[in-house]
Length: 140
Image (cartoon, rainbow, N blue to C red; front, side):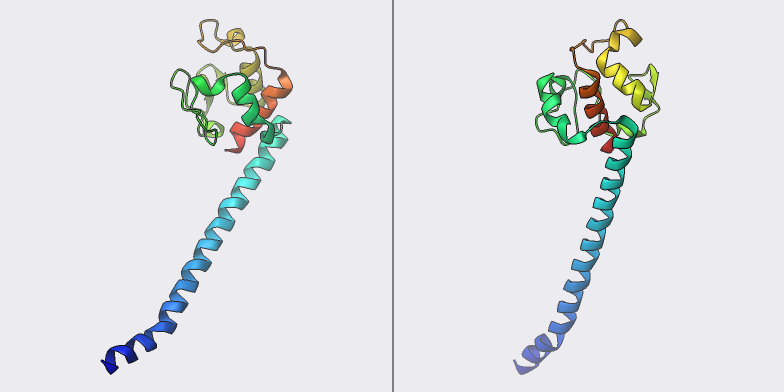
């Protein structure tokens, strides 16, 4: 019994050091995650001249979440329109426009201009609101 107790006491520092190392590794990984996220957000704001913080309300106001799956927007799991996850990494917007901030804003405002038979409706969204949505999507 004494040997087991002695072994437990001798392993405590090793376990404590291991736990600290694991915590440090997790903290560093989270730091990299948030740094990357904040860099993406800064780039998205610069590209679009929009504010991603305003986007969740705008997505809901215009019903975007009913048709699209939108990362980070609760209940946005629509299957009518495309999944908007990873939009910044795509070559085309809706298969018809080169992926650029201005093209994305133009598509959001007036999709029928670029694809007359698209299911995406003209919602009446303003260019400023569309820039906020584009900033959000490029920041993700």
